[in-house]
Length: 147
Image (cartoon, rainbow, N blue to C red; front, top):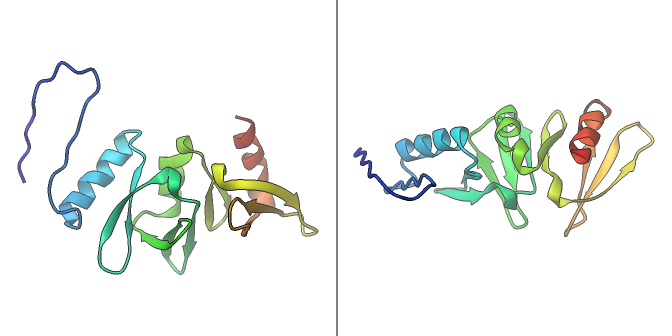
């Protein structure tokens, strides 16, 4: 691996990573950069490649059977990070945990309604699918909405 630093008159720091984006070193470097910046990118895995994806295009993340998945309008991808790591990384991007296994992008919620059980139902924009906001997470959800 080569590391090259160049002095620049630009105010904003620019980081360019060249190489195979499927290489484990590259994935680790991008993960570290995400943790130290407002980069807003995440690596999603499909069958045989890793994709660099804008977090704001992800509708929600879900944890199931020890794995974490990202749901977009078209696909479901596996994610390396744990759900709690995703919450910390992307809360400034509009993501909030709504139940034990789901973190949603608030920008994709169309409406919410109360259920008989005391939980709430979040209806998503576009496809109209619904997610459950559990009673345990509803107060933090309300505070998040209000800013």
